[in-house]
Each structure stands twice: as structure tokens, then as C-alpha cells.
Image (cartoon, rainbow, N blue to C red; front, side, top):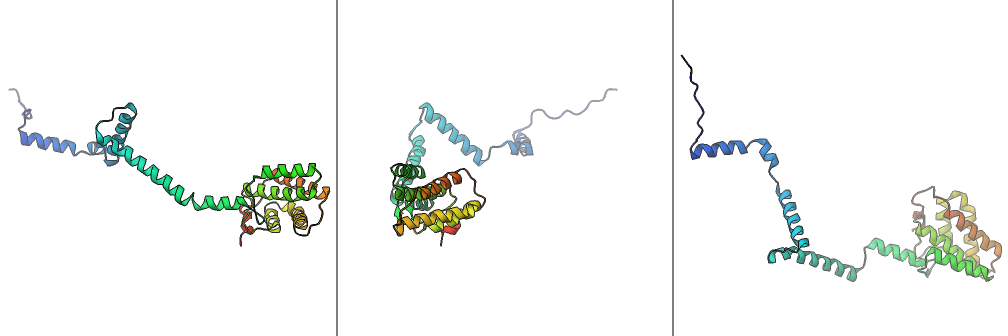
Length: 219
């Protein structure tokens, strides 16, 4: 006698089919494969970029993101024009312009060249002044010291000496030379110019041993 097994129904009715489909889609592997909100937004954005760069803008709605980007860019430009760049950049600009009580926007290389020209012409007073300014401006550009509007030559020398201890004594001497020429009208010598020039060259070839040495420049 043969045994017949019951066969599952192959043609379920509508409610049964809906239940089967709901049960199948409720499995974790289907839930994990379903795009989330972020995936859908990224996909829509990429589709919009594709239409934009291919020239297939479809209706006024596609121009809304373009207009929003243009408005944001215009707002950023307006803010920069009205209030200027961030405070950190403004502070750095003020530091660059301030050089021992004088407004000086020249770079260290420009000041150094002016010092060399003065020395070549035999004007050691100007050579010493410009040479020391170049030395300190170079350290400021390297962010080893921070030159504030009220910084003095000796404050700069002390801060630089903290970063380059082996140059502490000669830095103090070059600051003395600068002050003597500038404030006491003491004639400068070729020896003083050479001391500043060689110190500047030596510091440019060295790496500071202390981080944040410029903090000593601030009150």
C-alpha cells in the first residue's frame, strides 16, 4: 500500500499570501538591506548632481538646491566683507604689522634685504636696526615668538632665548645694540651689524627647543 503525503497549498488565498509576504519581509536580513533615511537622501543628492552636470535639469524643483547654495555663498561673502576674517587671522595680521611700536608690513626677507643694502652702503645704524627687525620678524613668522604691538626688543630677545638657550646671551646683546642705536643715538659699528647678521643666520638654521616660547611676549 502506498503512502501519500499531504502537499502544501501552492495557491494561497489573498489573506494567506499577505501573511506570508509580511512574515518574509520581517526577517532581519530584509530589514538590514532596507535603505535608511540617510541612504535615500544621499541617493537623491547624487541623482540631482548627475542631472545637474549632465544638463538634464528636470523642472523648477531641481533649481532649488542651486539657489540655496548660491544664497549660502553670498551670505558667507557678505559676512567676510562686513566683519572681516576670523579673529585669529585678524590678530595674526596685527602681529605682523606691529614691530617694536611701528607699523611694518614687510616680511623678514624684505627687511633682511634692506639691512644688507644699508650695510653695503656703510649705513650701519640702519643696518643694525633693520637687521634686528628682520631677526625678530623671522621668529614671529615661524611662530616661535609672538610680536604684539607693545613688544620691546628685549622682550623679543628673552622670548627667543627661551626657545634657543644657547643664543640667549647674544640675543640680549643684539637687543642692547638695537636700543642703543634707536633710542640713544649711539653710532652702530660693522661689528654690531655682523653680530646681528650672524645671529639671524644661526637662528634660521636651528629648531627651537621649547614649544610656545612666544607666551613670554604677552602681558
